[in-house]
Figure 1: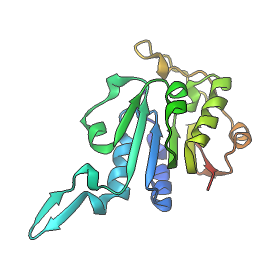
Figure 2: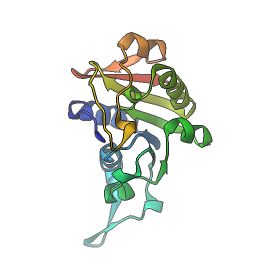
Figure 3: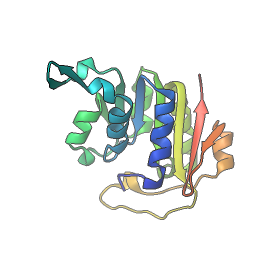
Length: 188
């Protein structure tokens, strides 16, 4: 489905708030909840300014944090995305990411890894690392969840990842969560 397990929202948003990134890449934006939550939680003091007795919403060009996203399925895009993200790139992340020339302080792959076969998943993790000059956060369910979505084959679950496999791929720290492995790769 185009949203992640709600049990990990506070851990992931809390982690992002703790590192205060100035640039974020959200790979697999889905319904856009992380872009929205990060935009409003990290940048809340910069979204509006008080002029006299009125508040004025600042234009996107005045925002301090740059949040880009990648989405394989354009049918998920709503006005939330237009508000929260500076740019959204469409297509398979394995094809889009090599063409991107920007590095981000924080790269998110939230409930995306299980959508790849293992070999492509390892390639995906390598691309996440190349896109970051700070931290990469990868979450994936601890248990395999069968999922086949005929209308959007990008949603099909193709692999299951263990904590050990994530450690081998570079995750050196894990946020606590009952349902998901939330691994951090520190490239700073």
